[in-house]
Length: 330
Image (cartoon, rainbow, N blue to C red):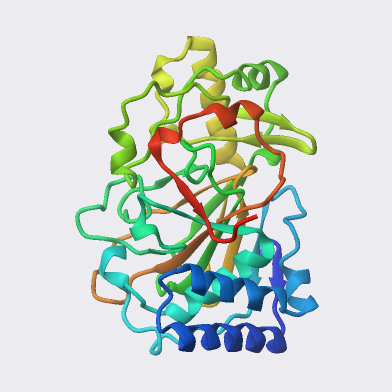
């Protein structure tokens, strides 16, 4: 799957100008994209007034692919400055685009941040970082980032994931595969809908990894009202602890997701929106240069109020002590 093969929704010039003008007004008022209650309130005000053409392009994901590419935003390679050396040094780099993503995310649902990740910001900078080349996090580079559900360990994970491209000179692809496109036997599906294995916190959540509590066993698959959904992160799931039958079913699902996986190589100004209940995403390996020209994405996570695509039992999970902060109170 290339960007051309993925479902594409095109913003017209008027919509792009409207979004840019709103983001620049907010940035001028606050001088930062670091979120505060006041900034978030202004984002909500502007998002409420965005025009119908923008809202139409941000309608829910409506194909079994479980994703689409929003195209048309303007990103100037010189204006945004060099790719940050790490998320920790990014600060307000390309801050206007943080606010654009917040506006888009607010139209689609409720943006969330994590107290324990990237200083609690609502928009994360995804860049390769020295020393993290082989980690299973967004800061890695030389390894395949295994296909996974974003923040799969947590019951409060996003329903939608937004990846906005700032720079991608090397056409490095994001991988994506939808559970709605796999072929599994009824027996495998039945096994994988049983809560038999935990999903542990990933390396981006150091505090969660030290949480003193029993990891809850969770199902990999779930029958939602409109079809099958999944919660999947093989890099942080102790699959070897499962029974042989369950382990084999899990590996068959993994193989099926690989079979139906496609690659989306984003260009600057394109935004990939992924349904986090249907689609696992990853990234192909690449060689980082650390010279200010490496791939640079911005990520926003979105909850959709009143959405029912997950087991009710998730409400009883401890979330390894991690708390998600919602941008806009109900």
